[in-house]
Length: 337
Image (cartoon, rainbow, N blue to C red; front, top):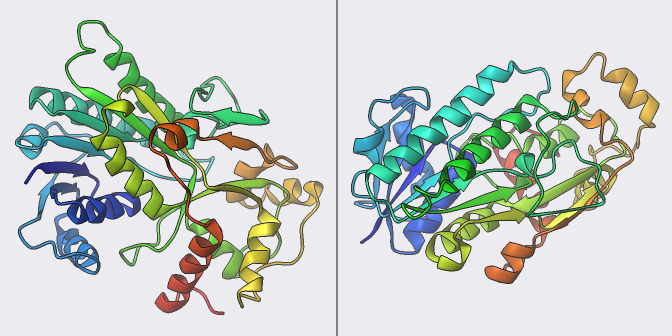
């Protein structure tokens, strides 16, 4: 049974990747930073699959060298999913960039040292089209690090992925390991743990009263189970080597997302679509609104050519994913219907 190392085992996407790997006959070794969360990870994975003798857990820190070589030893594949996540534009840049880049470096170099066959990085749309108002964006695009409209998180994902490709493309290193990246947009769908994930906050805020209106801007969404399946498919296909995989199922206006929720019984979802001037004014008092200011009045098209042409990806129906997310929050008592 081939073994796969998945970094960041407490993470929303990482846990779905672990489930998908075990379903496909792999054993998994995953890393967590806090020992007290070990049982949480085991319980989360066990909800879906039997992980007896198929899941190992080790303890690593993105900012510490210790343990990476031992953790990856014996693994045929590596999925590097661990990275700090935040949607705030007010974060300290170093708090996100340093662990993202240094963690990627530690994981990659240990993978090379251990003769891993393939390294898959969980990157993000943040590295492809953050701060861009291009009408169409594809796998080939890159976020401009000099753009004043990108967030510290956008910068962290872009710098980490650039580090990977810059290293991989060096002539003396290009044949040492196979590499590809998975670049999802906002990921929605039920969490396997009680932590609903940062990206699902967009649904939560529409339902818990903290967002009494919708801004006029677009959202690109993809289902978390789709993201996990693409990780595994990309891992096993030689056709994915050296490529990036932008994943987006559908682009919606905020108001369309709220309407989907209302149509399915979530009447607290806001009906009021706020004018741009009001959103700009309120962003002075709500730091989370700052991130949408640049995108007001804009919704782009995303071209996921690599995923659809190489991996024959057919996205799941995103409306179903949205309602499943809301239903889980209701079940957990996070929101009221």
